[in-house]
Length: 467
Image 1 (tube, one colour):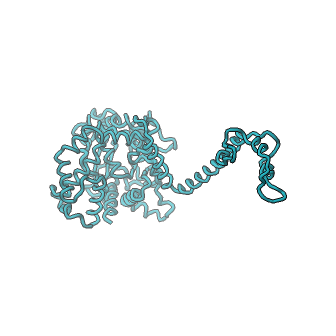
Image 2 (cartoon, helix red, strand yellow; image 1 turned 180 degrees about the vertical axis):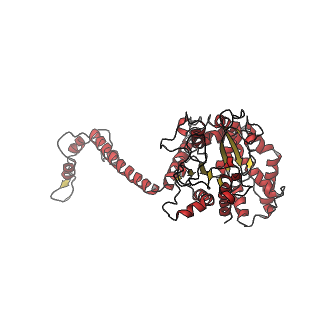
Image 3 (tube, helix red, strand yellow; image 1 turned 30 degrees about the vertical axis):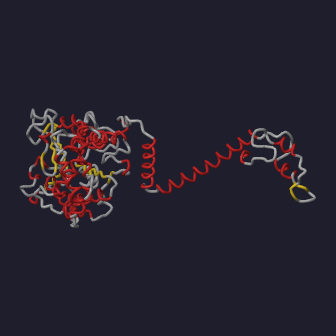
């Protein structure tokens, strides 16, 4: 319930920031400033005058494309977070339609196993390799083995909880326990928000340990992993700020007024890590219902601070971070080309970069990859049926191949000296009168029917060597 209210509040905050509704818009709301309005509800078509290329479509509902573009991955919690936020943002307009068919917001998503809203080492193996390189680095080993933070945490876990190593999942375990009002172990049950307790000591270590790869080596891991997502984000922005080189999309739609991406904490943190050394410390976990906003402003006067004619503002959970980016001044706005230069050097589809690992896969890693592929297949809709069909097909193909291979082998190995068939050989060993095995069988005829060297001795025929 608390998460629902948080996301609903996010939607309402966005509405207050970008929707102007005349007297209903309080003076303290950002939309009271004409420069902040995406939609003016006092106009019949909700439009905002602009010197830029066409953005959105005033003939469409505010929540329909191309006015809004909604993107989320296929996790249920992510979809619901976005849906609740959109209710807070467009609630009155959705209710006013009175038509369930009209009040529909198009969702852009992908299969979770191949989506790019998180760092996907399954699709791009080099991403996972960069993460491993960070944990194998001298910098990480020095910190995890020698830092006061690490020593304090390990000592606490061993002395108070009897655990030699800090479990990788301890942060999720602690946070889900405390956030659902369940009892923590006594040694960790001292959180009061003031800092310094065992809970925060362990939580801080776990956060730093998890996020270490995000900023290591200039954020290489984050940049490669978030490259495809940044390409999606920038495709909307470039159609506005550089329309001559980036015309409308292949669908013919103009760029959206608002593009909403619903992801995870593990989406926001690497995104922040790609924006420069000072933007994010790497030591703070993104809280639930966090929100990162990138505003694009058209500069109407000839302000020399914004030579491109466009500026951007970066806001994270209500705090303006623009000035923390390299080449940006202390002002809240910065020329948009700084943003373009920062991210377009690595914004790319996985197919367009070198995703191959630099380490030759071992037999063990190949087996692990095969296992991952199988698990991913079974987790997709219809995956179990597909797997069953592959097994049946493989069995049938194997049976046919085995039949023809054995048939060819038998024909090659067994050459007969006369016209006796195997059936005639077996029948010739029967005594018609006694109806029993005859001791007078002409062994020379049998011996001549079997090629030499396959197990025939003086007394017996080795049946195994005939197979």
